[in-house]
Length: 298
Image (cartoon, rainbow, N blue to C red; front, side, top):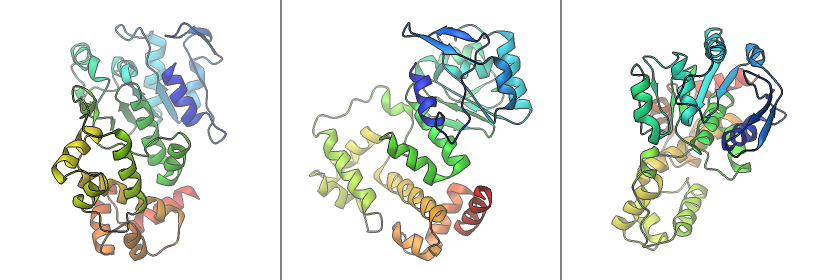
């Protein structure tokens, strides 16, 4: 039910043609014991641009042959096929993950590797993008996966808007390893760190050395760095880099500001520095990204 809620919130609005499908339409019993009315059969997948295989309780055994055929057919005709948590097992059973990097819930990674040794598992990632095959980690990582798909296909502004509506981070740094056996230190509250991060997002155009962030959190530099890593799975420097690039993407998509002004607003010394970082992340310079995004949106 959680996964149905995730994809429903992300794609169930008026901007998308969204449908739930099953190999046998009708009432489907969920993990909470509540029946879910599924109107469409597998034939509905024939026209889909995106097919999401949701987690199901019987993942230890292969799905019906008709389901596997439908997944292969969707991928074969050019659709993007994605799954998170143990939904990844369906893509693996269909052979769509052979020779590809993929992830799943850390608890079931060993089982996936045993059942499907041809999959190149990345057990630390929140999601893995292999082009037209995209996989995500467990449970709430479905939000990360769907936001990534929105960002990839419709831009940062669209993904950020949905994230704000759902009160979610637009992009979580770090992987699922941060949630395994790394308890959050008790020396300060989550609220304190959250306030510092919100303040930093609102002041990206200013110099933000770790010392400044630590001082606002009322911590030493070392304690802040340790606390930050435990809470986010990354370093303050990498987090700031991601926030600045996210903000730059949105400004490039939604404004006509010169690249030099975009760089200044997100905290870079000049357009050349932004260009270098942007090429590393997106593979194209900012002006080319803006031009390509505008053409695709049109």
